[in-house]
Image 1: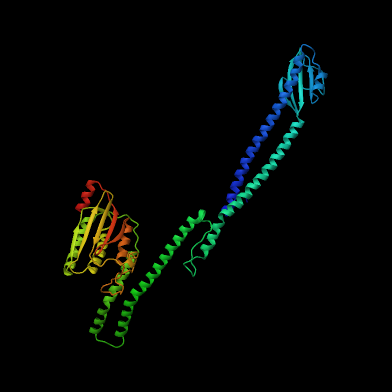
Image 2 (image 1 turned 90 degrees about the vertical axis):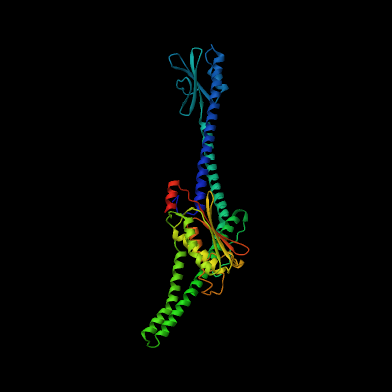
Amino acid sequence: MFWNPRQSHIDRLTIRTSVTAALSLAAVFLMVYLFCRAADLSEEQTDLQNAAKAFQIDAPEYPDLAEFKENHPEMVATVFDVAGRAEKSTAAGLPWTRGFDAKDRFLLYGLDVAGRHVVVGSDLADTQRGLARLAVVLAGTWVLLVGVVGLVTARSARAVFTPLRRLALEANEVGGADRSKRLQVDDDAEFGEVTNHLNAMLDRLDRAAEREKQFSSDVAHELRTPLAILRTRVEATLLRDRPPAAYREALAAMLPEIDRLSSISASLLATARSFDADAPPTDAGAIVSQTVERWRDSFARAGQLLEVQSAPVMLRLLPSELEMVLNNLLENALTFSGAGATTFVRLSETESQVTLAVSDQGPGVPDALAATIFDRFVRGEPSRNRQTGGLGIGLALVKKIVEGRGGRIWHEGASPGTTFNLEWPRVHLSKPHAETYLAT
């Protein structure tokens, strides 16, 4: 089968190149043949015309065929009278003609001389044999050149794709027991950039696998403790019969661990949620002000201050999502800042962006956690103490919400403290729509 979709790219490239070369060479060789044929016929016509003019030079005498045959042995001539009857001929009679004409293998030329009509003919057998030999040579050259082009194309294509084959074989070996192995290529000029991109992708996949491995380990750790406590208390309660009040006390003691399991599950589900549908425009300024007011008493009890600068700006996200973002950032600020510290919340906008910044005066993000602070189960307090460390899911959830709504988040170190910057595209609304949303 000439074309098979299951053929390799090299085979398809070779076939396409060979077909293109074959058609191009065929067109060139056909033009060469036609040019040579036209040149030969033109030369024959010129010779006939020059030979026939010799009769006109002798006019008004009767055309001398003997002298013509002596001077032009490769040609024949016939003299016709005015009635069209052949009078004399140097060979078999030629048909009557005027000007140039071709009959069988003869090229004819007829003209009037001294009251007679003379037809001069030239045998084209030699010319036709020469053209036939030329056609055979051109056909053989065409076949040879097409074969050479196909062979060179196939070898060149295979030579070009050889590094890719080696890369494919190496890629098949990557990801086994030794995940640190990376792709190598000899031809850096051609495939070095591709190899670097593939190695960068492998690095990202390796880091993602490490994060997932760490995530699984952290989830197991977080779930193991409350489940172990629940199992211990259930087994202790079932060791002997107890009065109803003791059972109620045992069940009440299990509630904090159940709440902890519920909190872990809810947080994990929140970080795994998707943001397929567009959210309606929300007055972010009102949500920020309301959320900050709910936290004022908590900051006051801790001996801390909470300052807010807000503006009526519009964002495309749900009010509950913005509240969740602020709650996590303010909880971190309250937890890690000491008495007398001040936390600043600023909501501002430019022509194209809306920025929310939360700055605390805590100890800041450790250098070791700067690159992973937004990963799940990453905590600044490494002891995993439930009272001070939290679950380590809050910032991961914040990043998920911000990026899910088309924004970005980053943190900056301060002296002292940390500033978390959140940025979204600004929502442009006509004035009536904006007033409606702000009033709502």
